[in-house]
Image 1: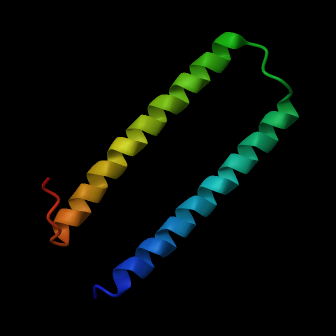
Image 2 (image 1 turned 180 degrees about the vertical axis):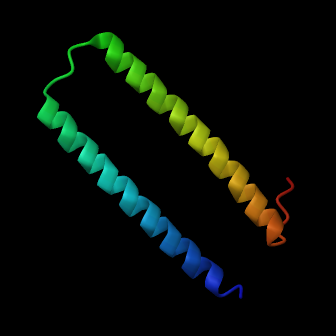
Length: 78
């Protein structure tokens, strides 16, 4: 069972990164079609929303990692 965990995690990582790259490229392509953003307020609002989404995703990932590590019996105490 433990031999398959690294294989599963690597496959999961590759899939997540591939999906992220696809949407990043698509977003940049769509932004290029729109033209340049001239509204500074909209740019700051979008930047703030992306930053908040990143922090929330990071917190969820940390909690998920800790939960899975406890579930499989790893000792994560300092």
